[in-house]
Length: 185
Figure 1 (spheres, rainbow, N blue to C red):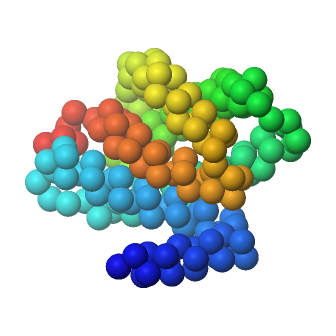
Figure 2 (spheres, rainbow, N blue to C red):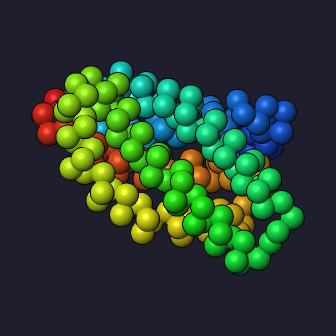
């Protein structure tokens, strides 16, 4: 089994080197699908919603993976050649003040408008009600993850690491973003 895992990992790393954006987008999409599968199972939906899973995979593929790819490249340029705990702290703070609030807000809007097909006033109300709690929770969780990511992960693996942890975070967001009427579906 270990040889197979090692072989798959080597092939993944090769694809990451040859086609970094595509590989990160596909990885983020697959992980988003896995997190939605888990969220649906945890929430106990009576009938599995394949459309929802597909729409969340699209979100990961078209948004999360590419954003992570370009954002981490930008962070590497901004802090080029600089190292140390103070630099890692600056990266974490910058990410938490810029990308984090945007990502949580966008996910809630995408989920409400696209995945659930709700009207803008309904989504706006849901975001207004739940966003502050979600963002505060995010600021308790993500700085630790981002510290590990910036401190220990090479640039090429940051999106994969982030997407792996984000798949767990997405379960939380997914369950928080759902409307009460959907829970009974």
